[in-house]
Amino acid sequence: IFGAPIASSIRYAGIKINIRPNEGYLCYTMPIVIIKCGEFLRKHAQATKGIFRVNGSAKRVNEIQALFDLAPDFGRDVTFESYTVHDAANLLRRYLNSLPEPVIIHQLYFLFRKVYDEYRMDEERLVKAFQASMVYLPHAHQALLIYILDLLAFFAEQAEQTLMNTTNLACVFQPCILAHPIHELSPEEYKISQAVVASLIKNHD
Image 1 (tube, rainbow, N blue to C red):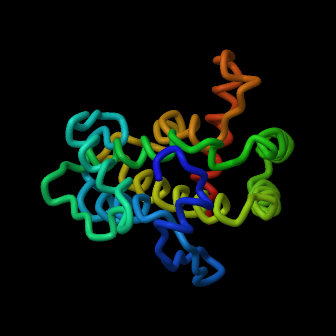
Image 2 (cartoon, rainbow, N blue to C red):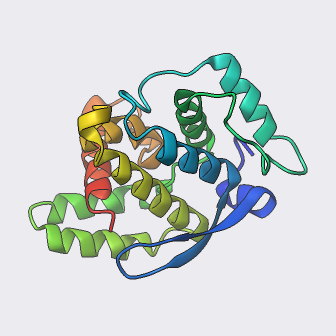
């Protein structure tokens, strides 16, 4: 599962969930590991300082990754009773960083950046343009993006407790959400992509 394309992950290790954006319930199939981590973090980490920044135990994260990689159940029965919120947060990031392509695929990298550049001063038009751009994502990537943005927006709302505001969350997750090899050695381009991701989190609905 780790290192495999999202479409493969959901084929063999996916579960259906409902995500409720403003327009109503939407049903998606998501990788088990994403849902397990996300639900655990929502329940137990909403007041944890530095969540997603503080490292968990490498040994424990390796242990639980092995469970999610193990066929045929791929972690369906895994609980985090023996693990910390930082272990779960690290596992979530590790899975996303292991994907062959970022959540926003390379082919659409410049489109999302262009949308942000053109409409960042007009929030209403920016939101509509982002929504229109998301339609071009492969279905599995689109579903994962919606879920991750919703999760990060949840934690951004808890920033007084977690010290992880939208900007901080974007810095952590930008490499696995919006990145391209052509800009991998440019700090300036990373900052632009971080601003795009921050805007996506802020305007995720």
